[in-house]
Length: 351
Image (cartoon, rainbow, N blue to C red; front, side, top):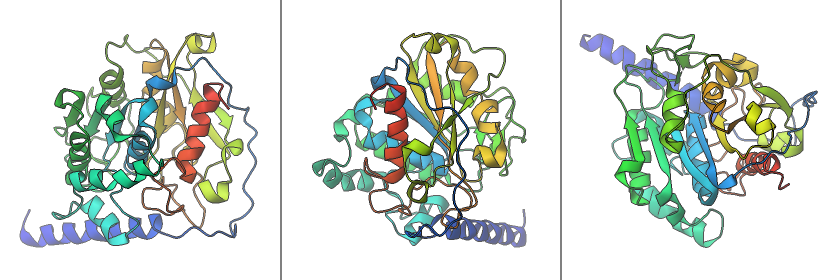
């Protein structure tokens, strides 16, 4: 690639990131200016026999930032986390310039060690669980070599945050060897490996990211089912005001037969990326990404909370890692974190 092409490519990427940030940093209207949200016709979320201490989460891009936020906020009941193209906790610090740096890999920002130190006041205030609970976590991190959305440095600084939290090296799995674009990686993905486009589920040979995430977190899993079982819809309207949370009326959950029959099961939460809600991409995440086939024989329930696209505050359904929903966004009191935690405790029969 000659110098002119490199400059053109760099400018294209910067323009893309600026456009993304203009969307994700748009302020939330407190006056409910959007049209009245549709009501869900889905059934309620049914309580199961859930082992809360074995919960885990994963996500892509904005969903990965949210997965880390959820993990840090509720680390006392989290077994681990999977971050696909996600950066460290508090990376944006409610600052548009820092948010841009988080995605672009600015050499000065983010700094995982510094962000870890910045969480101490949140612990003192009881806004997140004690940080020493992070040390027992299993952490999977992934950055594709062709990712045009989130720079590898952001993922490396997420790793630095966990190392600062004294997560042992053998509990951290960092994967950077694939020529993958921005997306979940699944054998049945509809995009080629290097794609950075909807539905953000890419096929890179036989690389099975759902299996790698879940196997790293839980270890010793039984083989996956040969088919791709579908998730079922549930009513998300009991879990918070959509004008504050951005939740869609309907979420999705996959409950394996054993868990439906009363077996004790763990819950894995999957946070979709921007432009990747079920409204946008159908079942590309809730089925094709492959988490459900691993859940079938391993007593795992998979929860897919959903945001609603097309809202003035968040038109492309990005989970909030920048403070759009309020200053508590990254804590237990954050509107979205509290809503998803309520889904988790409902599944556990504690709400």
